Image (cartoon, rainbow, N blue to C red; front, side, top):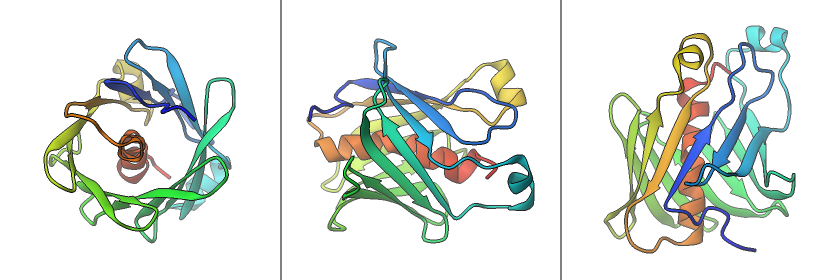
Length: 189
């Protein structure tokens, strides 16, 4: 399987909805072509959203624009951990959210640290460094437009790979950071 995220820059956009029943993110390459879609598997009714302050487990199917499954993302709020699984459901890596939500650790399937993303106090800009040192990517929360910013919880992000060669797994986990960040810090559920 080819490296779906093998681009210098990617954009993650969340379509705007006033009361979304399930989260959805679109991933575009640097030529603004849609390359993947992350869709929450189980929807949440309006009553459930109002009644429950936080949903513990949120699962996403990540597919190509044609609907071919490429990854799964399973975020568990109580353990501050998000599993990234292959299309067969096998664990390929994890993103561990630290207590302040400014630090995210990238781990392989064996629990070995691949890197860490550290954000500013406003949770708008993150630098991603390899375990050996050296920044290889930057993640920025970008302006989504007046309507989206004022009327919805939808956000846009840009991921830029700045360093030398990055392993496929580290690249994949880095592209998933904005989704985990958004679910952890900005989504109401």
